[in-house]
Image (cartoon, rainbow, N blue to C red):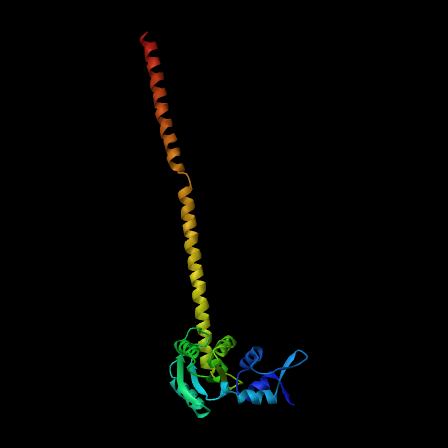
Length: 237
C-alpha cells in the first residue's frame, strides 16, 4: 500500500491541500497517521475520485486582474487556459478587476453565493493568488463546506507581474494612509474641542481686575475733595 503525503495526495486527486485536509477531518477519506503526519493511501484516493461527489463535474472559472488598464487580455488568457484544461462542464465564469487584497469583489461575492446554492462542484483558477493575495485558505474552507472543490492549475508561482504587484502594493499603502489620516484628523478635532472646553471653564480674570482698578482712582478723588474742604474751613476761621 502506497502512502502519500498531503500535498502529493491533493495533487493526485486534483484538489487544494486544504480541501483534502477538510475532507479527512469530515471522514470522507481515510487517513493513516505516521507519527504526527497524516498520510493517504492510493486505494483511499482512488475510491475518493470514483465516488458520486466527484462525478458529473460542474466547473466555475474565476479570473482576476488587479484593475490596471491594458489587462483585459490577461483576463481572456486566464479564461482560455482554464477552458482548455477543463475536465467537466463549465457552467459559469466569474471575473474581477480588483486588487487581490480586497476582500469584497463583485465577481467573488457572486461566486460564493452561487456556490452556497450548489450550482457547481469545482472552482478553478490559474494561480492561487487569483483568489486572494492573502487569506485564500479561509475562502477555500468556506467553499469546501459547500461541497465545492478549489483547483489551482499552476500550484507554484504567482500570476501577476511586477505591474500588478505594484498596483496591489499601492492599494495597500493607500488604505493604510487613509486610515492614518483619518486617525490624525479625529485626534486633531478632539484636541481642539478639549482645548476649547478648557477655555470655557476658566474664570474671566480681566473683568475683576478692571473693576478694582477703576474703583481705586475714584476713591482717591473723594479723599482729596474731603481734605480740600477741611483746609478751606480753617482759613475762613
